[in-house]
Amino acid sequence: MRRIYTQIPQEKSGNKSIILTILLDFFLSPIVIFIAWLSHLPGLSVRLNSYYLGFRILFSSDAEHKVELNEIYRLIYRSIDSVRYFEFGYILKEFIKNSPYEAYLDISSPRLLPISLLTRKVVRSAVLINPDKKDMLVTRKMINSLALDRRCNLYEHKIERLPFQAGSFDAITVVSVLEHIQDEHAAVLKIWELLRPDGVLMLSVPCSSEGFDEYIDIDEYGLGTQEENGFFFGQRFYDDNLLRDKLYSVFGKPVSQVIYGERKKGSFFDNRGKKMKLRMRYSYWLEPYFMSRDWKEYASLQDLPGVGVIILKFVKSKVIE
Image 1 (cartoon, rainbow, N blue to C red):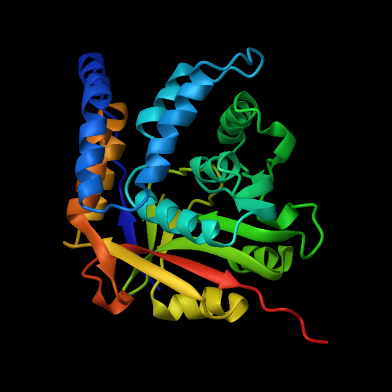
Image 2 (image 1 turned 180 degrees about the vertical axis):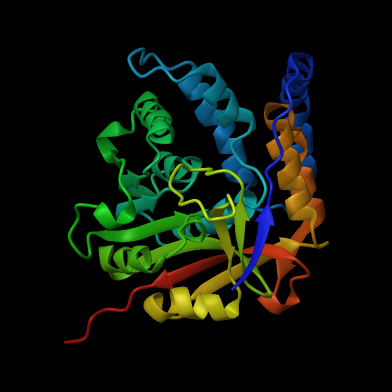
């Protein structure tokens, strides 16, 4: 497996530029979203829903589970970036086709996706898992502030430790997760075990015409094992062979899929580097414009000039006795 090693840029500080960025987020985000809508960028309905959810939480009367203002700000103005537009847009569209789903499981996806499915009543009840306790605490507060706690249970577990019987769920989402697990086989088997016959699994992973593993110089999620050279496993970019060997060998072939990728090789890593370096000072208000300008849909992984994201839908066949 080919490897690349990436040094994550150190964040730069500067309160004045942060204030300016917040003002630009407030005034220019709606304009840029409208421009992206004219370009038919997927996922904009989820982006607009984040405004609604953020303001609902802001004015929530649930003092016991009050969400921090910085997290509300992130939900309103910085809830979706990069390939999330494509992932959320496609998954929501596919879920709505056969909704509602009775028992839904989300495995460590960005919280906006399961919250959106719950608030739209596309799913009736949900289980959300995430081993990141800090991230799960924010999710728990948001779930309670939106009065979704009666329909949603949260677990701070890895997928392999979930206390559910086989076939417990008729819908599962796994968005941008499997690529961060160095040996994903046990997780893949568990996911398929938990899905009931006729159930729907939707997942996304980064992709490339030639697969590779990326190692970074920080343990981003606190779950990795340091390599000898001081780098940690960051993520895997899947090609056709890796998809077949790692995923299709368990899930079978997808019933549908869509591939989005950068138009110019290197734009994804350039954009991610800026986000890592600038953090709060990054101009998220421009993100919908960047994605509609720099990314497009491709017919196959072999057509990708650089990297992309593939979103896959699987349906588990009924067991024939």
